[in-house]
Amino acid sequence: MTDTPGWAPPSSSEQPGEEGRPPAAAPATVPGQSSPHASTPPAWGGGYGGPPPGGPQPWGGAPGGQPWGGQPWGWPQSPKPGVIPLRPLGVGEILDGAVSTVRRHWRTTLGISLGLAALQQTIIVLVQWQSYKNPDSVLPAVATLVSVPLALLIGVVATALLTMVVSRAILGRPVTIGEAWRDARPRLLQLLGLTLLNALIMLGIVLLAAAPLIGYLVATSPDPNPGLVVLLVLVAIAGIAAAFWVAIQLGLAAPALMLEKQGVRAAFSRSRRLVRGSWWRVFGISALAWILVVVVAGIIQAPFSIAGMVMAGDELFGDSAAAGFDPGLPPAALVVIALGGLISGTLTIPASAAINVLIYVDQRIRREALDIELTRAAGLAEPGPAGPADGDPAAARL
Image 1 (cartoon, helix red, strand yellow):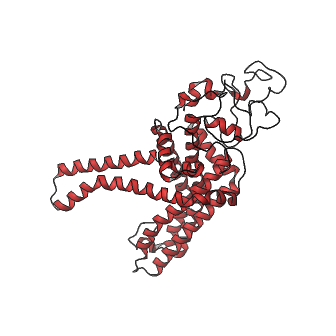
Image 2 (cartoon, rainbow, N blue to C red):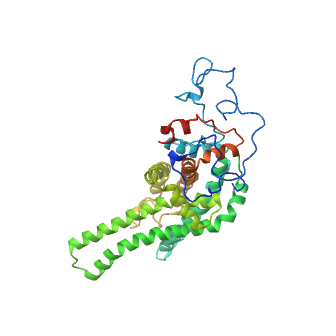
Image 3 (tube, rainbow, N blue to C red):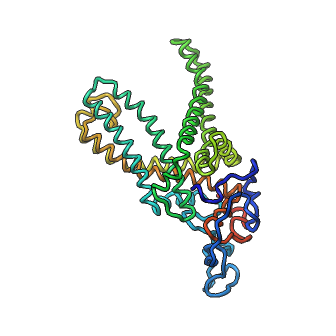
């Protein structure tokens, strides 16, 4: 969303934490030209701009004595022009926002993911089919090598397009595939470079930690010292843990690059600042999202994989390759398994991308009061000083 106010990074390099969020009545700390406010004040509970329906009511009361919007302390509801309320988010709200994005903008989100998943599965099936016809060729190894860069490239395109879709969905604005492509296209090469560099950083950390173990085993084979091997294994495990730590630190670089139009180095630095002090929270949400995506994908793919194995019959058990994903499977079984991958990819790719963008938005809301700028950009009145994001410290936390 290149023309939406509020995505530009703040002028200062260090941002306040959750406790340092400015009052809602103060000017927004995020620069950017605000959208004009609506000429008619929004309804009570939708934008804090007018009296409650039915005339003035006691603070926190609606006709009949019920609290407005169900807020426990009588606060009005946070504005919600799109898929998330514009305030610090809980884990459930981030997950719900991702699902709501797919549901409300299903033509765009599922259209993007369907096209990318179809391309990926088609290439995989063609390579595996050739492996079936030529079992003595090197195509199985080629298929394995091709799948990695192919998945990386498809992930880059999906991230770029779906980031633009989610950024507009937050403000309740529709977006077509063509509009998402037009907004994302200028940043695709930079996003590809960022993704490759990120992968190389993770791989380099792991290899650096595992190199002593590999070198020692090669040098002392076949009689290494067991105690030293255990020590070097612990070093390798520590390297893997360090790679995970860095991965979370840099996990918000992609939305920062796409939405703030930053360079690769600036996007990495931006991600580290947004994650600082919230590593465990970002890690927990990301891990939970990954588990849910894997479980959903497995549930969808399971019946297709079983059907493919049944169709393969004796050919499956007569081959030494991995069961269910054997490059020597007959074409009909390959197509059935690929169909399961197509359906699962179509449904899970947009949800994964949306969750990452919403984590980024939540971190900016907590650190930079981005909710105020987004409220303006949506054409709503700003929340009052007694809103839940400012009146109750617990409302800004999980």
